[in-house]
Amino acid sequence: METIRTGVWTHVVAPTDEELEAVVGEYGLDESIVVDVKDFFEVPRMEKSGSATYFFTRYPFDEKDEDINTTPLLIVMGESFVLTISMRVVPQFDTFIAGKIEIQTTQKAKFFIQIMDVLTKSYEHELTHLRKAVHSNRSRLRKIGNNEIEKLVNYEHELNDMIASVVPTNVWLQQVTGGNYMQLFNEDVELMEDLMIANNQLIDSAKSILKTIQNIRTATEAILTNKLNTTIQTLTILTIILTIPTVIASLYGMNVPLPLSGNPLAFWMILVFIMFVVLTVIVVFKRGDWL
Image 1 (cartoon, helix red, strand yellow):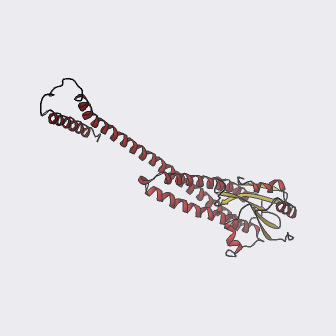
Image 2: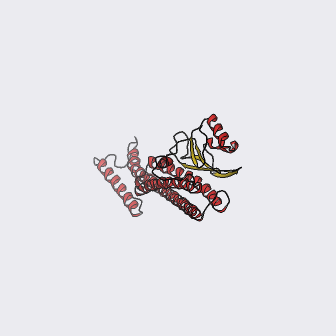
Image 3: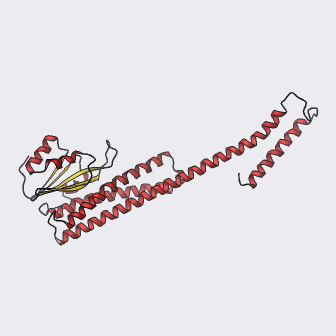
C-alpha cells in the first residue's frame, strides 16, 4: 500500500483479512469497529474512536446470494483523510471515479455530503422504479395472479429494507449536524439539512408505497374471496337443479308399481314434470338473486 497523503480519498472494495488489517495499521484505525463492515447485515450507525469517526450506512445493491437488497458501506472521516470500505462494488461511486462529478477531497465535510447525496439519489431511483411497478399492478387489479402477488411481496420486502437502512442513517446524520463530529460551515449545515429532508421524504414515499401494496393485497383478497363464493354458489345451485331429475328418474327406475307405469305417454309426462319443477326452482333462485 502506498503511503497515505493528506486530503486523499481511499476507496477499498472487498478487502481480504490481510488487506483490511493493513488498512487498519496504515490509517491507525480501530480494528474492532472496522471489521464490522464484513458483516453483510450490519445496521447503519455512527461511532467515534480516537481522531476518526466511523459512519456505517447501507446502499441499494442487487444482491444475488442474500435475501436483502442493500449492502453495508463504511465511511471513515479522519483528521487528514477520507476512507470508504465496502465488501461489494459501489456503483454509486462510478460518477466520482469517472470524473463526472467534481469532488474536493480536501473539503471533507462537502465530500462526505456528496457521498451521502449520491446514496440518497440511488434510493430515490429505486423508489421510482418500485412506484411504477406497484401502480402497474394496481391498474390490473382484477387480473392479478400468483406471479403478481409474489412480485408485490418482493416489492414490500425491498421497501422495508430501504426504510430499515435510511431511518437509522438519518438519525446519525442529525447527530452529525448538531454535534462536534466534523467541522461544518454554515453552507455545510444547510446541505446536511437538505439531505435529511430528502431522506425523510424518501421514507414517507416508501411508507406510502407500502400502504398502496397493502391496499392492493387487501383488495385482491376480497376479489378472490368473492370469486370463490360466487363459484361455490353457482356449483351449489347446479347441484340442486341436477338433483331434481336425478331423484325422479331414480324413483321411476325401481321395480315396483308406480303411477303412470302403464301409460304409454308416461315418459313424456314425467319429462314435462321434471322440466316444470326445474324451471320453478330457477325462477325462485332468480327472484332471490341467487343466480
